[in-house]
Image 1 (cartoon, helix red, strand yellow):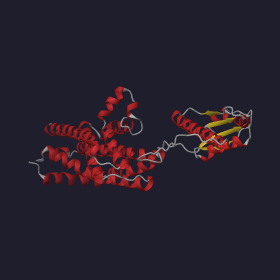
Image 2: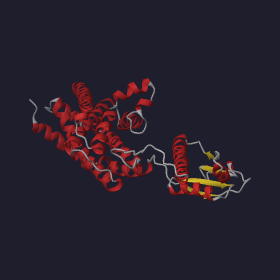
Image 3: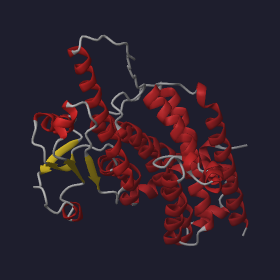
Image 4: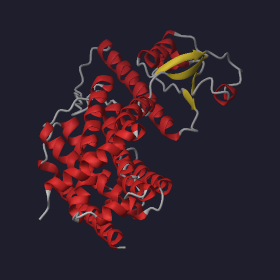
Length: 377
């Protein structure tokens, strides 16, 4: 029979140790909010105000209109206007500009004659992701310019051709703001990191301070010890969750659109996974330094690289895709983004919730088994 009094005694003891170590408390509650601010502003896939050089050899109304469409889109800023014959490659080598738009002579006259006028965009492709985005922007602007020119020509000739009314509508993130996608993922990664770190040091700290012997002779059931060790950090992790969501709302306008009860339940299972994993590491490591390093390796790297936080899982090799099924953050981020961005409940995500529950049971069971072995040793 589990004694709540004994669980409370172990929990109070753990809280006292946390109070004696303010750095641990700061790491668990303050560090996630700090890292959210830093990485929330640093991580951004939106490409705006690309430094562009324009070499306009035509100097016509048509060429100026084209340049104006680039500037007015806010995607490009004209920072240089090199003269004909000037070294264009040097501008990109010195990182003065990311791209160069070259408009040849006769651009306007070719358009007026109904011919195809060729322009050239020289782009720095060192950063392939940004370069692909910029190419997409430029292609859309040129297509829009061609469409506008065709429409004016048809109107001037008196023709009234049919056409396609293209009205795109983007759900959940109409502005296509990458921050709305990244911040929930960042929140899940930070919760995993801090929760694993905090609990991974708990048992090792007992062993290094010599207080583990007292726990061995105490009339404690293993479940009571696990609960007493875990619950204080679970409460602190929930406080960290509230801090993270508050910072995301205030700083990045990331609003929780779904039910808070669903968010609470999903976060509870996820934190149990993280705390159980940290407790398991704590029973395996011989020192706090080793526990710290193992926690970083097991929690941070997989949560960033293999969870879908930044890189799409379906684009990974098949071996890595198989490994991602062992990462709790993969499932929690799906639930978290659904609740925050789409406003859904847990209905579409029972599979993910089931995995989190199974992972939590496995790691907590293994941690309990290890504690039994250590108490009997």
